[in-house]
Image 1 (cartoon, rainbow, N blue to C red):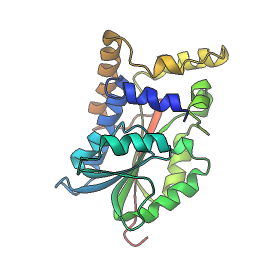
Image 2: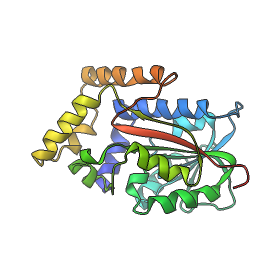
Image 3: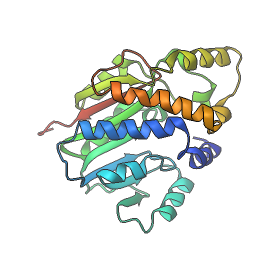
Image 4: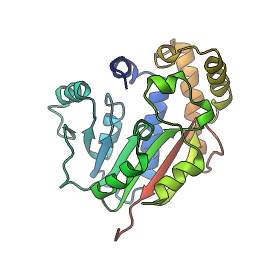
Amino acid sequence: MERKVYNRHIKNQKTHWWFNVRRKLISEFIKENSTNKKKNLKILDYGCGSGTNIEALAKFGKVFCYEKDKKTTNYLLSKYKKDKKVKVFKKLDKSIKYDYIILADVLEHIKYDGIAIKKLKTYIRPKGKILLTVPAYNFLFSKKDEVLKHFRRYSYNKIKKLVSQDYRVKRITFFNTLLFFPIALITIILKVLKIDYIDDVEKTPNRIINNLLNFIFSLELFFLKYIDFPFGMSIIIVGEKEKYS
């Protein structure tokens, strides 16, 4: 991503409705797919960016963080230098095996996504999990994706096939469904008009709008306890490493 994108995330990640609800969603899926209830999981936040999810993940155990961008890594090293539950890597430690590896909107930034997923499997303990969130539908690929350095968006079948090559898929569903139609419509209009809108959508909106979007998006957390959504702006998938693989 561009440097200004990291800076924008640092500024808005605690308040923006999107980051807020996605953190809760990831946390719910970790709880749903974990047999370890002692909150001593080893979690790798791979491509952790500005640290959007670190504090939420730390509630489940120790978080190991890896981010390719050097300036952001230095920012995280400074921020968490006294936090015993957070370890920031400049380079991954091959000796550590994780209960969970999280890629929160990371895979679309990786050119050879299948190779990356396969490689990360070597860092997961037997019966450990990989959890990914990715943007959905290539027809929504827009200027925003270009600025964020995305190589692609994903279809349901594409991401399921990709993960199932190396893991047993535990669950997969779309999310950001209740807001899908207005967001998709706006995205298509701005795409046709070739308008760069990323500065606006990644800044926290005024409190009334932010609270409204947060409320609507949060409703999905209840429904996702019981059903999978058939469409949405994003997809979340959990894969499990087989015991002897």
